[in-house]
Length: 139
Image (cartoon, rainbow, N blue to C red; front, side, top):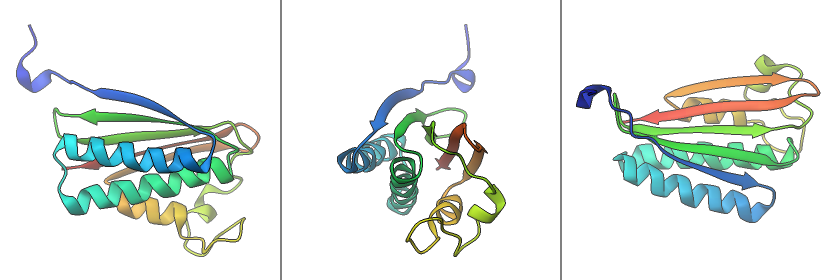
């Protein structure tokens, strides 16, 4: 029988991102999960802000997709989010993470800002194959 220290009790949810209303729903659900995981107000705000930006990017640049949301309680408490799209991908990930870089009309703070707001950040993208971004915020 596993000990309490090795048990992992994830709460997993998948949310489609197809419309602007879905972006709002992602923010709301991430806030709920952040509270459930025991994150403080500042950490809640950081993960919700990062999730909002990445959900918007999934819709606007990836043509829609989904986010997988998970609350992890052990070995540490927090929220992990995985944003997935089958869009055009990112040609130069390093450039896309630099502040000021944009392929749209925005300020170019999105990906880099989301990275700074996260405890963990990983991006996998191939042109023509889509993008997968994993973030986590830990207590």
